[in-house]
Amino acid sequence: MSATLPLASMTTEEKLQVMEQLWEDLCRDEQQVASPGWHGEVLAAREARIARGEARFSDVEEVKARLRQKLA
Image (cartoon, rainbow, N blue to C red; front, side, top):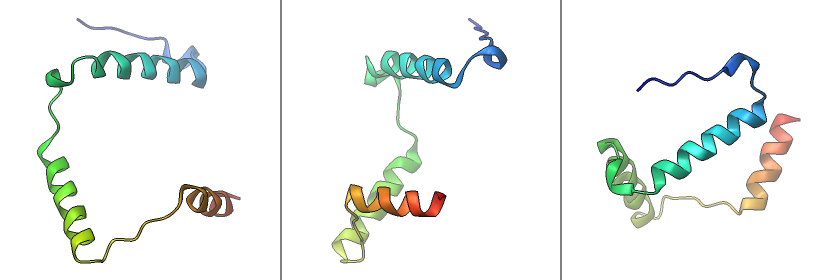
C-alpha cells in the first residue's frame, strides 16, 4: 500500500499530529518492529561508561536552560 499526504499544504502542527498517530499505531504491537542492532551497541557503550564512572548526567531544567541560551 502506498499512501500520499499533501505535505506541502500541511501545517507543521498537522504533520506532527500525523507523526503522533503513526507512532501510536506502531507502538500497539512492539513485537512487529525490531530494534536495529546498533541500538544494543549504543546501550552497551553507555552502560560501560556508567560502570567506569565516565558518564555525566544533567538535570532536565539545566539542559533546557543550556539549550535556550545556545539558541538565543
